[in-house]
Picture: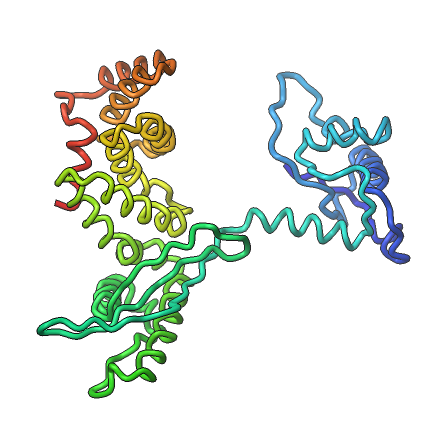
Length: 356
């Protein structure tokens, strides 16, 4: 909800850059908001504050004055009311108008979409009996905040080339101004050429990510995660759950960065992680992973995962002594709602089918 008032704060405070407490400033702002709501002047409005939508009881008065924290009673009470409305401000902090504006800009910046940086800090040359190629280490980093999960992957030139050809099939117009680093006829393994191509690939990934439709495309996501996911599922099918789990968690970290706008893409990986944790006799971690996956399965209607996931969570919850009555009820309800024969596949059997 946004409440706007026809009040120029700078007229009273910014001309002399007078330090005022946030309580004093909000008392003045909210009083003007009440006057503005009474007068009803829609012109020359400025944003007073933002808060999350609040539930409104039936037949209640929804005018602005009932949504404004009363900061005049006491600083502590005013602060508590401000926090209730989402105003996380200390009532004792002295802030000038400019500082207050910077504060709200910071609050709004927290709601901006996640931006990613692609770094290629190093390379290595692999020499085999019949081939020789360069491997590029790629690190994906969240910008704007400290990123404690700087996951790195390795890709060779042919992987970049395959990605570019896949994207050209659907996004040829969008890629008209994107330059793909070409190989040279000679000198491809010279240090200067490798360093130049490393920087070119870094710019290439940044250009791809800057194009909205491409950063949401399956080939772009698959470039970062598919090789590790294929190896992980192969290990899982072979019963090597520890090695599979390590690769799955790495791929999951990358998926959560790349698919923050489409978290549904993480569901298959979360289910595979859950299977590995269960088979490694770590029911607590497996149940917690299931709690992350289940809301996404419900929200996006992934019916093929819902029954197997609920069934495993019921088993794990019973083993851990957690209350599972609601999960059992949901499982029964989902099975009854399904038309035709209910799939008898377990979550592990469903996961094993991936990348086969």
